[in-house]
Image (cartoon, rainbow, N blue to C red; front, side):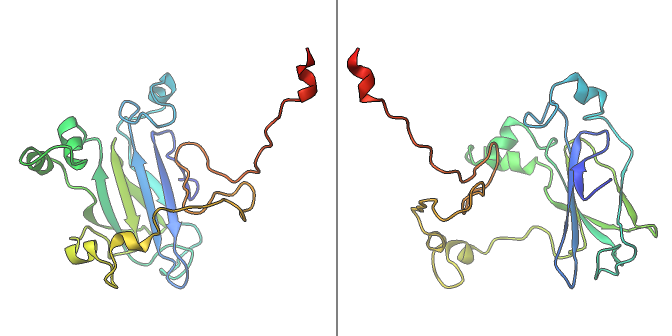
Length: 222
């Protein structure tokens, strides 16, 4: 890969990397592959370009390289320890039954059956060693989502039902955020997004109010 984030070279996918603050400088990378038929919101979907450039094809492993030399896990360089790997594939789990079960649209036992037939998500794949030249390789099949990280405390955990209903101080979850929430959108700099808003499709930004044009009474003489 040529930079910290971007599209996979000549392929149907993306990757993004993160570096934590000092002194640990923990590193994480998330990479995803998709097919045009299954990703209706992706770029170049359902076009001859996407197919000619390999979206959805089997590929050799992609090579990622750390820049900056040996970092010993304490700087901007190659970690001195193996990377932890977690894997999901969202194309093998797709389907009306599985999707409905995930969204809670089916009652048991149909939902239980659908969930039992689904592949595991965010499954730990073991360690991935970094070569002496600072490179490591990932083979991504269509639908794969890989997380590679120096953080070794990841994984799925059971939810504590008492904390799910109550916060650490005994407050309900709803008390942690004021509802209903109001904002007059004053005091922001122009072209910045307001508090608690996040861009998904389109753009939220602060702009000055446009004065509405008013009809001129003098024009009503005729």
